[in-house]
Length: 191
Image 1 (cartoon, rainbow, N blue to C red):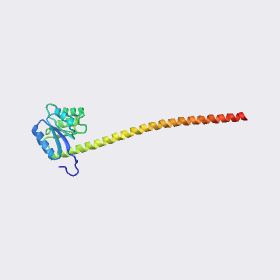
Image 2 (image 1 turned 90 degrees about the vertical axis):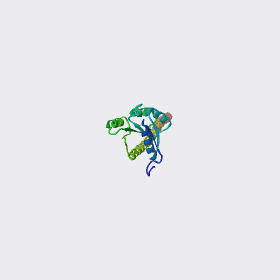
Image 3 (image 1 turned 135 degrees about the vertical axis):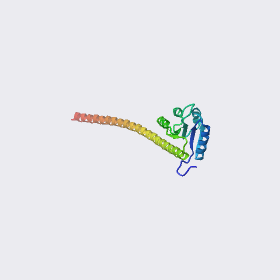
């Protein structure tokens, strides 16, 4: 159950793991902790699922055989199906090499089996909160960029109007000077 201070909506998780028992156990535990969990056994079916079902977190077993874990993550990212999702790779115990490989490939986190579900829950919620803050920051930056673009356009229009006013002023000054010269000529002709 969500505790005070946790996100009000249920976070959506996609678990990609070939082991049916592991999928069932993880899904049951995460569901009891307040997550909506979707399950699939490989990266190809995950791609299909993500077309219709957006998720917040994608848990990927690094030991997938049909399409390895990192390749699955890369395909999902390349397809643009989970731009706002956090990727968490699942590795075996004491497999520091796969952890480094996963993080260097762009995973947001790496966990090892077997894992403590309370710690997993805290990590997933932290990742999602950070992703949400980053999304908010990105939206604010886009709004600021749009405002700056509008201001630059307005500034350009103001510069054009100012240049036109300066040209009008120059024409008026020239006309006044011409009138002044004509008055001076007429006065000189009278005397």
